[in-house]
Image (cartoon, rainbow, N blue to C red; front, side, top):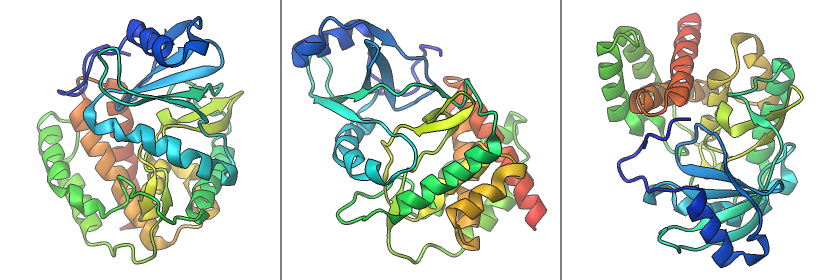
Length: 301
């Protein structure tokens, strides 16, 4: 991936810094080699530590709180989930000129689905649906709010700005996108109790091995609220041919499904708008999400 900064407040992180942090705070791992992990991730930098560990460091102040949340809640969630998730091995503190908490995890083998798509998309759709349903059933007492757990309409200004600018660049049909988005704003909102959602089920946060889905990573956005955001994977990753299998496996009602498509449209427009220069890989995921959401909207109206 490009080393171009994606955020105005992004800090410098490199192998040397990671090595110094590990040596100072986890001396038992001092002699392990540090290797940068190629990733389209936007909130955290990832480094492999030896063969069995991974180091995750926030890029910005806004993503720094994710570390404590993952360390607190992943052990609570993991036993109830049907796919592998990151296992925290140690939580670091600011040091060596780096100002945020950071964390060490057990390394999960596999390639993210941006680099290595699954060869059995129907099986992946069912497995993802089961994961979403299992997460939703876990006890949510004292859980933090999901960063996508509130009404998608709260992103209205950002979405309209994205439509305006992307249309000016010829990347989106402004009339079609605006009509679909205004339909999203009219949808009934979640009235149930807050439930768990991952919050960021994108292809780059899903790992595959030998052609099959094997793990879900990056729980920085995990929390409780409206579960609709976790269905946006139906448009960011899946196709029309496997989407219904995911929905059936996830057990999603009509209103939640429609809000999930709204989240896919919102994510797609804003991601392509924000990252089209600095992170073209993620921008392309956004572009696909918009195309799939608009096509699905057209089929159902």
